[in-house]
Amino acid sequence: MTFLNSVFFICFASSLFPLLLAGPTLLFQGFNWESSNKQGGWYNSLMNQIPDLSSAGITHVWLPPPSQSAAPQGYLPGRLYDLSASNYGNQDELKTLIKAFHDKGIKCLADIVINHRTAEKQDDRGIWCIFEGGTPDDRLDWGPHFICKDDTQYSDGTGNPDTGERFDPAPDIDHLNPRVQKELSDWMNWLKAEIGFDGWRFDFVRGYAPSLTKVYMENTSPEFAVGENWGNLSYGSDGKPDYNKHRNELVQWVQNAGGAVTAFDFTTKGVLQAAVQGELWRMKDSNGKPPGMIGVLPGNAVTFIDNHDTGSTQNKWPFPSDKVMQGYAYILTHPGIPSVFYDHFFDWGLKDQIGKLAAIRARQGISPTSRVEIMAADSDLYVAKIDDNVIMKIGPKLDLGNLIPANFQVSTSGNDYSVWEKQP
Image (cartoon, rainbow, N blue to C red; front, side):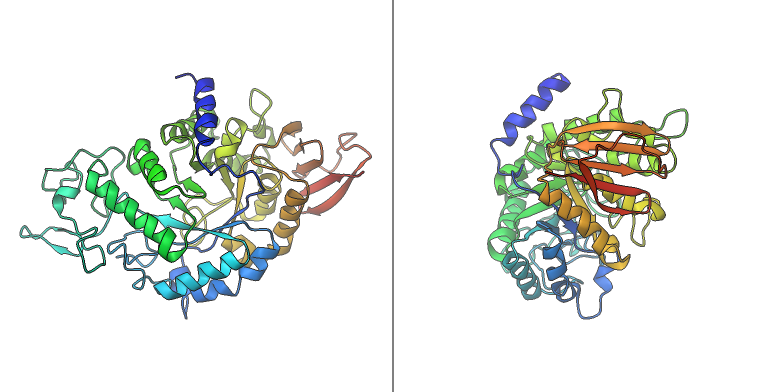
């Protein structure tokens, strides 16, 4: 299938699902790597932030993995139905939080960690491979034959081969097993019906085939879903990121996952955080479009500056800290579905600045598929016009010449960024 045919297929497939929302969509990651340590519980703490998030125009909040886990952050889940053993709070507190978000018109996404799973006890070999679902019956009560056969540390060799990348800290679950597909789908539908979740953030989707993400999408019909497909960004001879292969892999994953799911735009993050360090010419591809996934399939791209892995206390791939607002000026004015990180909004004191950019996005109706005209892309200056109504600039250069028409007025500005809106 050619690339253009792939894009057509995605657009067609997406019409079958309610995912690509017509109205403005603004995602918020509602936790960081330390949230599970919050005194009094994270769910209770987040209740206090809802008014600020509502005022900023947040439409969807991504909440942490809700189940019992061998690690406090939730990414080594075991008893999936046991939501009261979470370090973030108990099941009733989670339901209360979700209802409070819903009362403000904000949808909630569950962090779905299903590539791997931690066992409840050992088998007669002494291997940790007996799983407990967290219910009185046998739902999600699995044994070693539910583990991928090539995960030899845990498997008994009777499962199917792994369809994706290995995850060494815990057993890789055999998603080709029909019972696995059914019982995980039932659990996700229970999260919707009983707990109140509206959609999903799929963790580590590189761990299993995209066709399996398609299965879970079709079985659970989320209102919105996004996958974490974090692959290595290749670098050119200059040591800087090369965007094309990377973003096309994201597009291919979306297509193979059925076309309705979105993907975090790691390409835009990688190129943007290199570009703001004196190389803003990188923000224009060979076709004159944005170099990230938003330049080829913006309706399925979720842009972001940092998350609990790349930033927070893990700091695996952080955006330059003194240029974070340039990053938000870019993603909040450009196509794609922007995501705001908890740390930046609350802990870094950027709530007002981010809120002003979000208000412009909402006021001007900037959508995931808005048009972009790149007016300048030099080492020290990037200027773009969005939908003929908004012009934004990032970079230290102050002399813009005649780039900004007289009928555009500055709406907000900060250190090395400005946004203008067209006046009537």
